[in-house]
Every structure is written in structure tokens, then in C-alpha cells.
Amino acid sequence: MPVATPAPPAAVRPATVADLPAIARLCAAHAAFEKAGPVPADLASRLGPALFGPGPRARCLVVDRGGELVGYATWSREFATWQGAEYVHLDCLFVTEPHRGGGWGRALLEAVVEAAAAAGAAEVQWQTPDWNADAVRFYHRAGARGRPKVRFSLPL
Image (cartoon, rainbow, N blue to C red; front, side, top):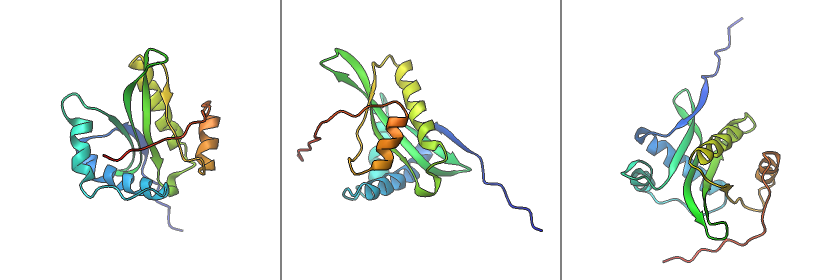
């Protein structure tokens, strides 16, 4: 009887410049999942300076499964006027379909929360589409509470 080859170990780690093409592919899959428009063809080169340039504007963690990236989270520090304090905006958190339910979304969220706390942020804020019941349940189980708002975008 053949012995099954174990799956390569997975870990949450900070993204590197070498990860940019895979991160761009994950972003494209995330945008398609959320029924958004396509990501720009040059997304990897756009993300490079924002994530790895001097004074990076955003941070990124990835789920690395033996060299294959199967999830990511990006966040940035922002300012809440009503609280007079900085918070972390979790812009994206995504795990590919075959790897959902394995604890990687929770691991990414916990890593972002740890980074936010270490940076002195008052809270972490994010949004998810209201039709994404699985994500809403996931965030509720993590202790988050939704706030009724409508998100607007004004193209320039």
C-alpha cells in the first residue's frame, strides 16, 4: 500500500518582494470572488512601492504552504477623528477556496490584530460584502461586531 505524501506545512509570514506576483494573483482571485472589477494588469508592480518602498504605506502577510501562497491580508494605519486615535484598516483578508476552514483566515486576522496592538492602534476596522454570510459568521465568531454603513467610491 503506497504511503500518502503529507501536505507541505503552511505558515503565516510577512510578504516579501519575491511574493508580489503571487500576491497579485491572490488579489485577482479575491476581486473575482467579491464580484468586483478586474485588478490592474500591473498590480504587482503597483504594490511593490506601497508594501516594500521607503516608509511603506501598507503591510502584507501571506499564508505560505510549502512555497505556494494560499492566502493574504493587507492593512494600513489610519486615523479616526471621532476617537482621536489611530486604528488599523484591514483592507483585504482572503484564503483560497481549497484552504478555507483550515484556520488560516483566523491566523491572518490574529496576526493583523497583534501587529495593530504592537503599533498602538485603538482598534482594527474592515468591511466585507453583506452577501458574504460565511465571512460575516467568521468575523462574528472572532468577536467583531458589524456597523451599519454604506461604502462609497468616487473615481478620479
